Image: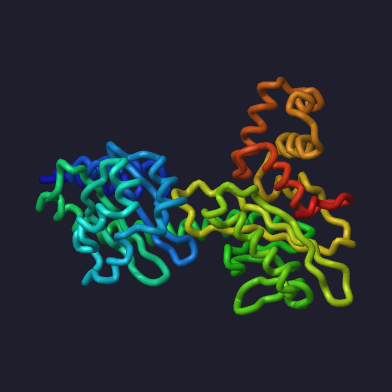
Amino acid sequence: MTSATELSSLLADLYGAQLEPERWNRFLDRLCHLTSSSCGYVMGAYQEKGNVILAGGGQSHDAEFFRLYSEQYGSSDPFRPGLAKLPALGVNHGTELVDHAAVRKTEFYNDLLSEYDMEYMTLLLCNFSDAQTEGLSLWRSKNHPSMTKESEQLLEMLVPHLKIVLALRSKITSIRSVSLFSEAVMEAMSVAALLVDGKGRVHQMNRRAERCVAEGNGLQFSHGRLQAGDPQEQAQFQKLLQGVTSKLCANALPGGAMRVTRTDASPLHVSVVPPPKDNAFGDRDRYAVVFVYDENVPQGNRSMIMRQLYQLTPMEARMADLLCSGVTINEASELLRLTTETARFQVKRILSKTGVRRQAELVRLMLSLPTSPEMPRLL
């Protein structure tokens, strides 16, 4: 039987994971140990993002499973269709969703599950609707076909707590993204700025953006979404949004810029870039920051926008500007009177704060931002 001490530690990690994401792994490690499971995954299926893994743990947990499931096998998960047949939320076994023999015949099983000795599954289903499904799946090896009654009772007790935690996670993630962007907007940016999701829904915008969209010339609201009036330009705009917000575009370079034509006026320049990096586990609510400005009106300094949006220090902003102009790290260290080691450390911090992986992506991101007198490079 699970002791009071073990249960207390388990719940402490579950609730603490909202502020310390690394505790998800510890919570799942403990839970797998208590239920004789080899690994466990917090999973979500969302209307806009598809099937994704939010956190994982356990003795046989492998980060590579995250990637394979999210990028290749999630869309063919044979357990997903059976969720609609379940009588209620709570603890359910894989055989209640789909026949085990049928699962063993699928590519999902032979190419993925069998590789990680994930034979038998028990699901803690917390939310189920057309818009979103969330739960925790525990997997056992071929040597553990059944779960003990004691383990099932522990899982039944955990279900309401997990539902609360997933709801908190959703609210915290959304609030964090909006508040980080709001802080940048309140720095008196000289351009219209909006926080937009992958479908074009606006979650936050400054007054300049409100005036720009209210004019309805070039950009407009349609069915609650920000759209370009021209169909071809709208397709390009949507592609830029997806490049920043979609997991399916994880390998795409972040950000980009385009022109949006207007009636009897010069084109609008639209820049789409990632918001400040969010460290909460998972990222169901992904956003893009959209800048809009008139090409004929002088804009602010690019490095200032980088400082406002990504909280770069003045020295980091200067380093980013030099890299954007084509200067190497060694040359930048000499110009800024830094050691090469310090310069490289600063570059790593810049990449971390902006959420990009390589200098080439950083340069592309910066060239997408509003600036004067030169124009950002277009797609």
